[in-house]
Amino acid sequence: MNKVQRIKSPSGEDMVVLSAADYERLVEAAEDQRDSEIAERSRKAIERGEIETLTSAEAKQLLAARSPLAFWRKKRGLTQGALSKASGVAQGFISEIEAGNKPGTAATLKKLAAVLKLTVDDLI
Image (cartoon, rainbow, N blue to C red; front, side, top):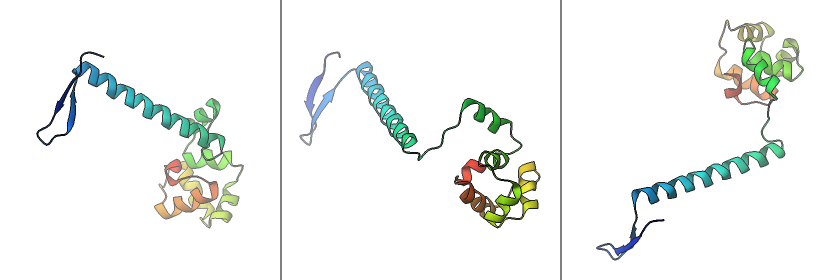
């Protein structure tokens, strides 16, 4: 770190003047620390089973699926009929959503997400 100058503000507050380069290094170090803390919290949440992860193959399947709903329903081992029965959403409507013909209402997606143990965002 370069030379640091200590000063007092007009109100008597202790202040430090440092170079822009030193300031940028401090900001970067703080961001790195925050990133590390976020990564550690995420790792622990995954270990506790609070966050579901996908294998590389599953991620490719999700991206290639007709819709996120189709991928997650199959991943959970459910037929459209079983998902319909568990969610109260008509099987035909589930089929339309999966085919991309209908977007599904927020209320419908919420019901489907609850059965699939997902968030609505996972189905969008």
